[in-house]
Image 1: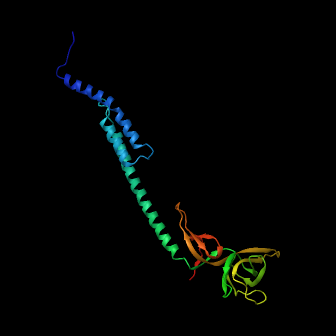
Image 2: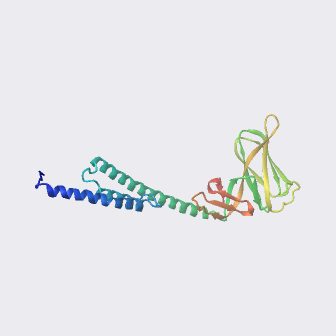
Image 3: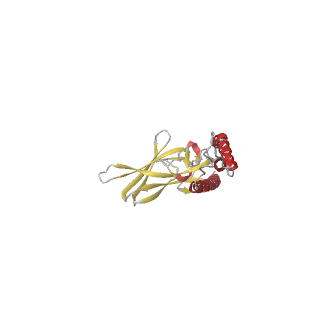
Length: 241
């Protein structure tokens, strides 16, 4: 003889129908997952959609644990915070790039000092350069050669202490004649205790003609006059007039 509990029959049947409906609608979770991922990263809207879909389609006989639900909410909160942080960093980066571009554009037409051994020289007036002396030495000389490698002038700086030491070229060759304007190479040397020549680093003036902005977020470049190439903004030692 079959025994039927008529008091709970309706509730059990509803529970069974709910379970069957859950199994039938499992495809919605898959659809939500495809919508959330696809070819894009999981954003906050897609994450929330997955969470709501999961809650709608959970097994009524084994509902989601409260701890797991709180953990998912915490993940959602963390995701929201990370997205907000990313937006803030992107805005700061954009503002910094704009500020850097404005600063660099103000240098067009101005003279700057950079570490180099070549310079475009207007020999109708004097040019000032500098030599980085690593330690006190008894003699420093700067040999100036033209584009063909011919020595035009040798500037004797004499004994120098450690530090950045300046020299001036009046634009004349060793014969006292004004050299033609153009690109010149400056080789600074000294001698060690054994009498061997030691090369020193020179810093020379250059004129900025234009600015090149990086398309990849890198440092912008300053293009120099006279085919002297380009230098990074951070390589500038001194800004002149």
